Image (cartoon, rainbow, N blue to C red):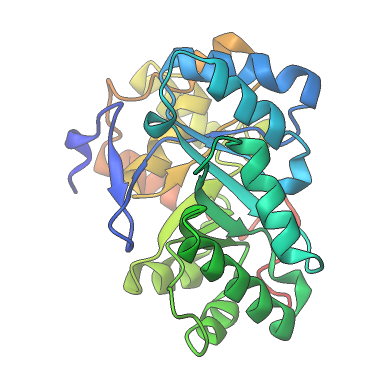
Length: 278
C-alpha cells in the first residue's frame, strides 16, 4: 500500500492518460443560489476537482464561479453528467457552454449519470460522448451507477473505453464485484456519498477509529476512500466542513483500522441503486 504518498495534490492517472485530482468536491443538492459561494469556498480550501451534473441544475453556477475566480481554468478539473436520453447532443453542448463558455471551452470529464435509459439508448449516449471527445469539448468520458453487466455491454460498442465509473462507495456499501471489474479494466472508481449522508456518524467502529486518530468520523471515511484508491466526492455547503473534509493528509489509517472498516460492508445503499437496472 502506498498510502503514505498521499498528498493534498495527489492525482490518479486515467486510462486516457489524463490526471484527475484524487480528492474531489461534489455539489449534489447544492441549490443554485448557494452553489457559487460553496464552490468558491471549495476552491479557496484547495479543492481542484468539482463534480456537477445536469440533474443538479447548478452547472452554470459552477462554471461562472470558476471563470470569475483567480484559479486558472486548466488547473480545475470539472465533471458533469448527462441526465437524459433525448436531445443528447444538444444537452451535451449546452452543458459545456454553461461550464466553460469560452471559445474552445471544454469539460474535463463527462459521465452518463445512470444506466436507466436501457441498452440501446445507452449505446447512443456513449456514441454522442465519443463525438464530444472528438470535437474537443470533453477531455474524458465515463459512466455513473453502472453495474458489471452494463460495463460488459460497453465492451461491444465503446471505441473509447470509460475512464471512470462513479458509484456509491463507503464502508457499508463496498460493491466488491463492480470494484473488482473496474480495477481489472483500469476504470477509475469515484465514490459518491462517501460520508453516507451522515447516517453512520454514531457507528461505534467509526467513532473508535476517529478517537484513535484524533480525527472526525467524516475525515476517517474520506481517508478510508483515499486509501482504497477511490476518488471520494464529499460535499457540504458549510465552509468549516468544506475545509475539514480536505484536512485528511496528515494521518494514515493503519492496516487494522482499514480492516475494521472493510468489515462493515452490508451492501447498504443510502442512494437509489441503479447498478441492478437492465
